[in-house]
Amino acid sequence: MRGAARAAGGRAGQLWPRPPALGPGPPPLLLLLAVLLGGAGAQYSSDLCSWKGSGLTHEAHRKEVEQVYLRCSAGTVEWMYPTGALIVNLRPNTFSPSRHLTLCIKPLRGSSGANIYLEKTGELRLLVRDGDHGPGQEPCFSFEQGGLFVEATPQQDISRRTTGFQYELTSRRAGSDLHGLSAPCRPCSHTEVLLAVCTSDFVVRGSIQDVTHEPERQESAIHLHVSRLYRQKSRVFRPAPEGGGWQGRVSTLLECGVRPGRGEFLFTGHMHFGEAWLGCAPRFKDFQRMYRDAEERGLNPCEMGTE
Picture (tube, rainbow, N blue to C red):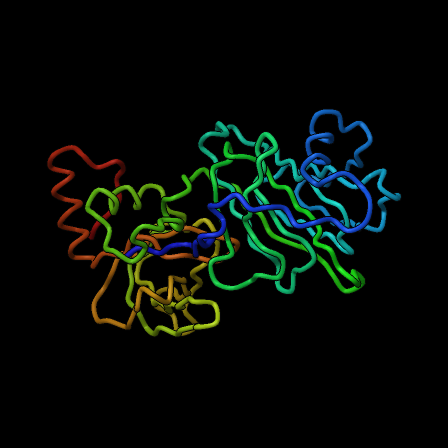
């Protein structure tokens, strides 16, 4: 079984025409290019991890595009009264080459007033349409594919509008782990299981106590009782109140049709916007067999106890 982040939908892979601007002023794409090439008049704001600002600071077509600089691997952007556009520049403090980084964004609840685009050399690709918060609106892409361009949509009244999203940079490739779009629910291969044991944010041995479904989010929550905790980067699993192990929950796609089952499994996965998402989850006896077989052939990428 493999957990997956919800895909960004077919529209995110297309080049979209720009919405018409209200009132006088240059076309948005020309405005973007002018700022990229000579944006001496842009307004700069930075706060390491997160940024919060207001479109009301713009002065009559003089500062319609604001530059935002962030230096963290995760944070939040909140833009109240959106007018004009934002260029979000991410320069993470990391030793990983940019070609190995994946950027994911997640709109905040109630976000509205702007479209979010992927921009590179003046070409725009729609990632999240204004007001669209349905399942699948957590697009991920390679850091080298471009940056974020947030453009306010024409509104009669901006007083109740706030555009906001979380962002997250990881060293995992877009299209892998949570983001495998081709077959997100298929069982992992032996090689994938052994690699998941070495690279996952959590690795535990346990059983499924219950599964609850959230149709509105297109997710299922798997409630686990853990008998052995091999690794966890966040406190997903906490000591059970009655003692004798740990308990916690991980998420997966509703379409995977997870149901409670008997027996012990090896659960692996990654943290995604503060939530634990399921990766590979073979039955523990099957994992023991594949691990010992790889160990005999000297093919294990890392070592761990299997008893």
